[in-house]
Length: 333
Image: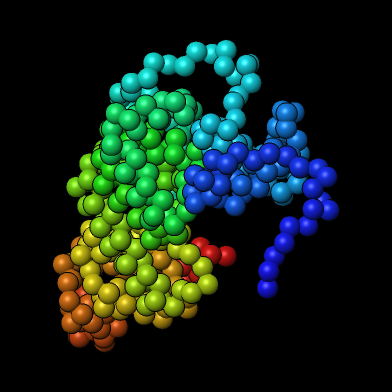
């Protein structure tokens, strides 16, 4: 089958720079190309972000990100009003110390605290271009990130990477490791990656070795939490922050294994009729204080609480487990 151009629709046309086909088709996204075509369609009028957003079913911020890509590529220029403010000197676009950043409260992603950046200065395309000329690590890092994320980086994402690299003086390996961790937990947006790295640096995790150790710790915690969810039959919900703190304490502070925790779980369910992390934690805390470290020791302690008293033994005339069970039920009413 041969394809021929139908000249019937050529009564109205608009030009597209050859550079788009020669240099950018391989790297630009589908959204960026659509935004470009609609912007060129109405030239020489100023680009109507709201109109394009409505046409494509995207948000205005997504349209702006796409336009930033083409501006950095040299196809667009900003209005005069946006150029009134002089650009800072091109050298280190960001301050040399991360302590000068304006940072908000942290939000929790399970056990990992992520710092949200409220305000920071934005780097201009010319600054980023100058940085790439002076430091070959930046182009290599950007190319590597595109391969690992399996998508081209938008101008806003490129700016974020350059900012993280220059502002916190991080190595490319550090940033790549953080991105790989984010991929493992299903978070690949650059906004999330920026918050995570900012939070790590704020906690003093600012070198490759520290980041590697922190990721190993996070992975170990996640493994323990998955094991507990499996042992306890928790399938329809995520663990709460408090429950995760309990689990970390049982494994890390008390040094218990899954077998001992399962015994405490069985006793909790027998006494309360349900899973109760505070009640289970009380049992494990008692065992830790008593020096119980093995299954046999735990079974012996559990048996001693229910075995008949010998003549002359000074044993209370009440059942401690029964009282604990009543208190637990009353507290939930």
